[in-house]
Amino acid sequence: MPRALRAIKPSANADGPGMETGNRNTLQARAYGVLSRELMIGRYKPGQALSLRPLAASLGTSPMPVREAVSRLIAERALVLLPNRTVIVPTMTRARFGQLFRVRQLLEGEAAELACARVTPELLNKLSRINLSIKHCLSKQQVPRALIHNRDFHLSMYNAAGADVLIPLIDMLWRQAG
Image 1 (cartoon, rainbow, N blue to C red):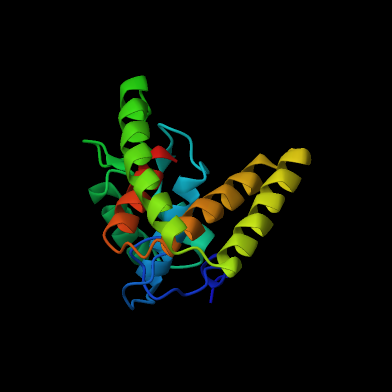
Image 2: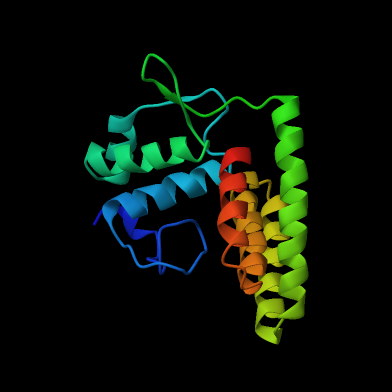
C-alpha cells in the first residue's frame, strides 16, 4: 500500500478525521482522510489549484479514488470547482473567515463543554502530551508539525464529548478554514 495511505491509521470510518461512527476502509476513504487532514493543517494555499493526477501520484493510487474524495470535499465546500473544471482551495475573505470563526466558536465551545463533563485522567494525560508536543514544535520553529498537533489536541477533546452530530460539523468547518 502507498506510504501516504499507509500512514493513515484506519479508523472506524472515513467521514472525517477522528470520528468513530462508520466502517469504510477504502482507497477513496483514505484519500479523503489524507486530503482532509492536509486541508485542516493548511498544506494547500487559498486559491491553489489541485490536479487529480499529481494528487493521485502523491498518494500512490489511481485518480479515481482521489476524484471521489475531491468531489466529496467540493460538496463540503472545502474545495471549489471552477467553470473550467479546475479544482482550487477556496480563497479566504475577511467575511468568510469571520463567519467560520463565529460558527466554530459556538460548536467547538459546546463540544469542549460536553468533553469536560466526560473528562478522564487518560484524556487529560493525552491532551497534556499533545500540548507539550505543540510547545516543542513551536520552540523549534516547526509550525506545520505544531498545526498537526493542534488539530490532534482539539479533535481528541471534541471526540471525548461523544457528540456524534457535532463532530462531523466541526470537522467540516476545520476543512473549510484550513
